[in-house]
Image (cartoon, rainbow, N blue to C red; front, side, top):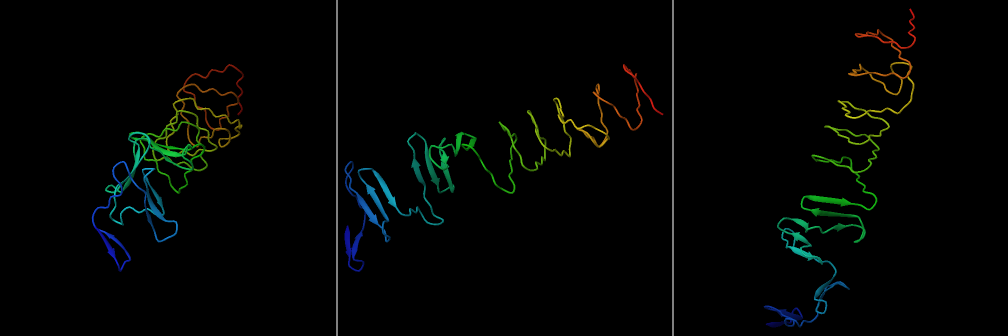
Amino acid sequence: NWLWDESADGVVQQGTLTVGVDDTGYDVKFFGATSGISWLWDESADGVVQQGTLTVGVDDTGYDVTFFGASASHFMLWDESADELVLAQDSKLSFHDAAGGENIVASADGHLEINAGTTLDITAATVQLNTTTTDINGAVALNGAVTGATNITLSGELDAATGDFSGLVDVAGVLTVSNTTASTSSTTGSLIVGGGAGIADDLYVGDDLDVTGDAVIDGTALVTGVLTTTA
């Protein structure tokens, strides 16, 4: 029933309020205390027009809110019991514009993609990748130190200005040093080894061989050119 409240200078509704009937509705509009703020049920559009802040629930007591898309099973859900926002199926979270390439999407169950049209910047003091396997399909430019706590396996080419390896380096393929710096001592040249070098097969030297210490040959020394000795 309706009650006119003289003190409030308004109408009090007690019970269910129904506007229109099934298949025939009417616009209903509620105004706020601020100019331009309103809530409208638009019967011709079969939808709600919200102008102003929309709050669902109160702090510590919320409600589920679902937004459906044009494709089946695609929706955005605020799940109040789980306190999380759900993008169902492969619904995208897009940035900058709806049709652009900057988005986050779960293209399949267990598969999450972060896409950027040109550049993806990650700025942080520390970035941790807790993965079993990390696949990088393309070139990697690193402007800083890289510290590996475990094994790093490279199936392609490693191009680095400098490299500092404190552990074992195992190269299964051919190791090529393209630098052409000549060697005049044990601390100069394209390849400098601080300790001994163990070679299991043949050693070919294209230019001079300079040994400052003793040369111990356990097998046969075959000399095809001139052998010159100096005391």
